[in-house]
Length: 525
Image 1 (spheres, rainbow, N blue to C red):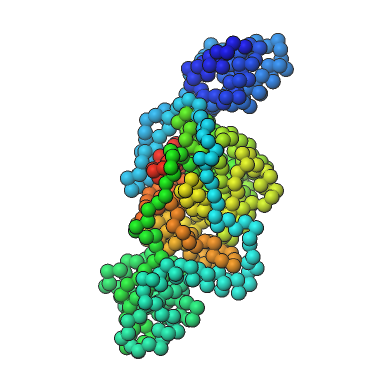
Image 2: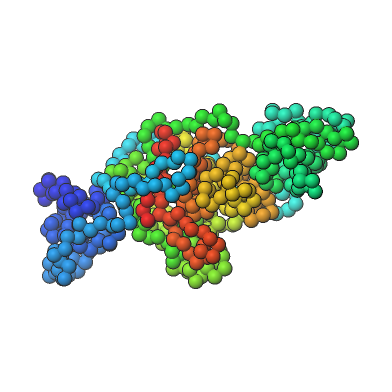
């Protein structure tokens, strides 16, 4: 075989609009007739292929071996057409198109072609650490004492971030103070209700009891009441009424992200792709978009993408919503995961993968959700991914990414005014969770919460990036220098989504530069 043969094959494929895996080129160059083998492979490529993969070559050459009398080139009515000239109209070739969120001045959405990716970096430069993974650590039994313990832990850990801001007193001590005293309290929001006069009564609870706080309707901070959720941790300052039975609120504080927060960044130019809600097994799984995404990861443009974070709902699941079976392409849950694993194999094997479960996955619905059991881990073995609990914090070369699937976003969006939380701007709902320093503060509502020895849903440390999915909408922005990204989905609109007015942003892949925390969004739909 002439030494220049691989280079000629790469050049020929590039001229026809394709990239190729290194091993695929080697196998073509080793064929008895490389040019004929190349022609046959190109002729038999799937319509949506952008990269010639090893499995394409293997399949074509094996068929050629089985029929040795067949010619190596194209035959039949389309033999005169140039297969390398076909283009996929659903993928742009460099022209930027507007970000569908158009929020907070966020960047363009674009997709470009390019040569083969080269991620030949020193392995010592890579760094991936996991924190907050409670897989295998579940201790909750569902007893009353377990719930008491988890709320005590929440109050203690988030309360510690507030007690330095106010001269707090326990509820029992406030009850014994004289009328007119200046008072402050840190507690869980036990109740929120309006009075006949249009004021707001907020009941705070701590380990010693409860105490009512009145927010007057004419105060400048009354709008903050619209942001409150039951069971979140809050601090209030005010003045006791003459009878000491209630306090008039002068100010309120959330645990919040400090405005002075400075995010960490990587020491080199390296990128992470953040995706979620793949939903393999659904009739509406966008296999073509996924294949274009996987092919793009093999290109030169994606050479700096060294990490792939998948935020839950790898499969569509079974029995998740009414009549779901009518919208399934794969009805067996294990076969869904096997299919997902086959799609994962198309991703370059030199990319580090981390994944968490979501509400469609085969784990418990109550949060925190442990990572998958051993049987499912063995099925989803492609590229040896790190499979951790929902939520978990993944630190990539010094940049911390809080991964949370995002079921509580439904509750935040339902409870809060549209200008503060909506499906069209999912990142703004994420801002509210950052402000509360908790991924799912409200208990007893839509989000199912499991009691554990500690509250794994507390944001103990400030993340540099907050990544969610679930709502199938694309949105990103920054809150106090924390980058919040909801990464859309890979599932077209289902009949169920249509019935509840969900118009998904499907086939997008947000790409984060870990050295700058800048975001671009690649579109594959």
